[in-house]
Length: 272
Image (cartoon, rainbow, N blue to C red; front, top):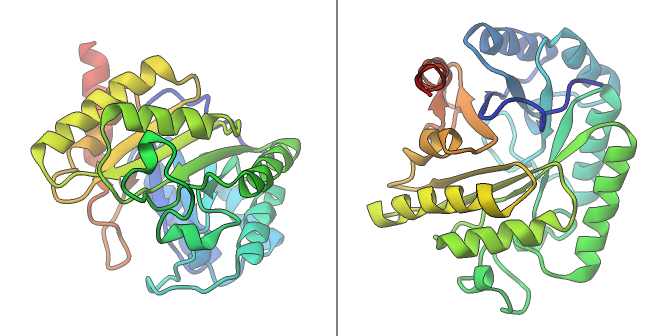
């Protein structure tokens, strides 16, 4: 099993890898390492084969700890259509192959909530029908069982939520504390920002998260005004910054350039 992701000095720079083959993944991981990545964000749904032996070949070749995720998108950025139980099984195969951790999305075991909130509006963070937020006790119990299973196998769990709506700082903190009850090792939240005011609110939220939440949190905002939060929030204490080493048609263009992020983080560390 690889080193713990939660123990990496914050902010850890994650090189995002979306490749079809073992050889392609190994090459991308090597490039990420040479350009300063601290960890790898490996998209399992892009791989042509996800059996334990195949993933283990990638893990063995990587000098960096791997966070495995399955966002149900193919290599060509099309919906993969993998059923929920099969998606979870793939994540567990990655754990058995030796990855450091998995990304368990907030909608796990309730895929309908990927597209919008389906519960009762009883929390501050449920006001605008956020995506990937589950409040159903039975679903949460299954998620907790999965977290315990991953822990028993020696890996960690990043619990991620992409609500798709703007939130005030207090809403983000309440959501993080709600997710923390499931006992993940890292929490990731991505809200949206269309204005400079919403971007600035994300800075306040990150500062508040560091004070209120014991679990390491990676938090930034997406959207028209959100890109600056991808580097500022990690510098304010966010656990992970997700970066692209070489942009191509599969890349999330809003993600940070790995080389530039490495230079920036190292420069700030020297200054402080």
